[in-house]
Amino acid sequence: MAADGVNTADKPKASFLRSVKLVAWSFLGIRSSKGYRDDLAKVNPLHVVLVGLVGAVVLVVGLISLAKWVVAA
Image 1 (tube, rainbow, N blue to C red):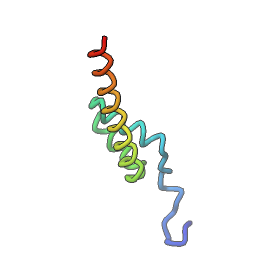
Image 2 (cartoon, rainbow, N blue to C red):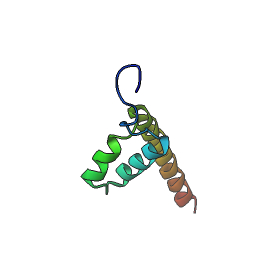
Image 3 (tube, rainbow, N blue to C red):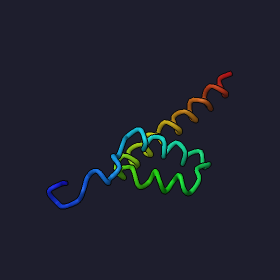
């Protein structure tokens, strides 16, 4: 038992990989609500924000690169 009286064995461990999976499914928009709620209870909100920002930047850079490649061809 932790010092604050909460049993840490009951809390699922937040993982960065789980946050990446959650954000990836959210970008695709095909996540079930039950799976979303289950994952949301097991992730660190800071991880989700960071992965979301990085994912958005990668998506924008990828789209810009694709557009430049198509126009150059």
